[in-house]
Length: 49
Image (cartoon, rainbow, N blue to C red):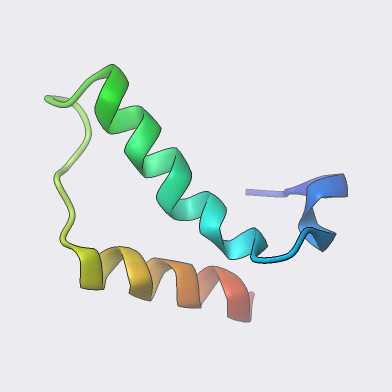
């Protein structure tokens, strides 16, 4: 995901967890329930990208 102008925000990698949580709220059956360590790993991948 290209964050465009928001990529320079502090802790921009947190968007991964924020979007996942929001999608779970909107449709919990369509979004997998990920454990906390998986979400942290996804944040780390985003930070390194």
